[in-house]
Length: 239
Image (cartoon, rainbow, N blue to C red; front, side, top):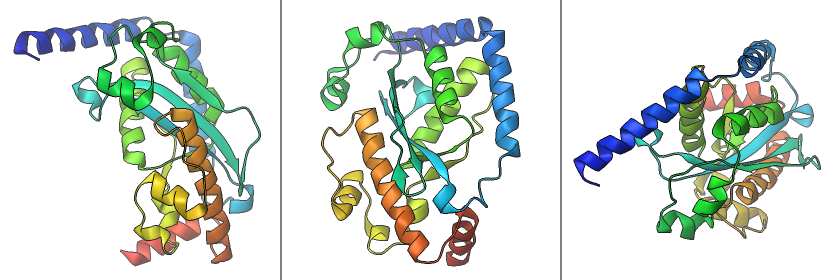
């Protein structure tokens, strides 16, 4: 993209963001403040793994750098209660965008520009996602990607911080042999015999990761870890 095109893209993004901020719904802001207060009061570290509920999620994006204009296309999530993937209805939504999807991203994700034009706006999707999460901890595979985009999106839309605890799957896989040597989601799923079909669809990837997390929780409890605090303490000793 030439310098003028890049400048226009950045200007458009700034205008969109500023417009979203100026039109923030007071009810949504009030909800976020209540949620953030609840998160600060919730002690996830001491909850036994058998009683711990987490929300496992995945996002599809246009790239890796939200600060350079890359954006979230879709969010998928499901809950894991202890060692069992919840039967509760999962979360999935595309996010509205009038900017066309590149052929490369379309080929990877299957998401089309027309689908995004008809999708709900980012502000609505993010609030619905927060309502689905409530005050549970989040889990993602290679979570730094999800964390970066969620932080950027939350700040851009609501000028507030992304406060949820976000755990990478490696938080548990580091404790399990040979899981500690596996990197990709496909490798981890293959180890547990999990069907890894429909990759790069946010909901299907979230469901695969949820199954993997549930199996990891079962294994680490057998190894003697009873809660998140136990794992944090052990990982600190490994450094």
